[in-house]
Image (tube, rainbow, N blue to C red; front, top):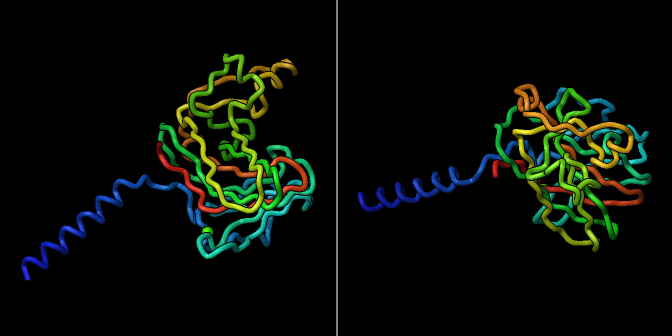
Length: 227
Ligand SMILES: [Ca+2]
């Protein structure tokens, strides 16, 4: 009996350790076990802390619940019929509370059209022009002047299979513009880096969207975890 008890205790302790080692996912319902509710789409960020479909394209982009193979089950399908600007249409979730640390945003994606281009970033929930900065992004680096300091973009060449997309964000820093450094400067502006505020850390939105027209993809297993 004692021997059995000891065995149970060891198994329980190991399970506990395994749980502790796994970084906490700040995204709720990242696997869409509860299907996305898209009965209503939003043209401004809602107060909900659940997934939401943001749409300022009058339906040119649709974001809807979908199901795939047994492994993935519920997912979300994004379909575009027009090119998409960063502020127009996206799958979003409002999150309240991160630390001043580097976090990795990760998700599974299955392109349903060849060359589907996904873009993802993290913005302040209230300020339209305040973004968490990409990890390691250097505003003065000439080689990345054509890139956004806020957003990552990936092209999935071949349709039909799942792949993992991930990149890291530095939650100690924000930038005041979405466009590329060169793009902002060509209009006489400046991209400025600033330390993150408690307001941003306590209320931000993760954004996942397709960039180009006539693209379709499934998204699943979204996580935001400390690196
Ligand atoms: Ca799923």
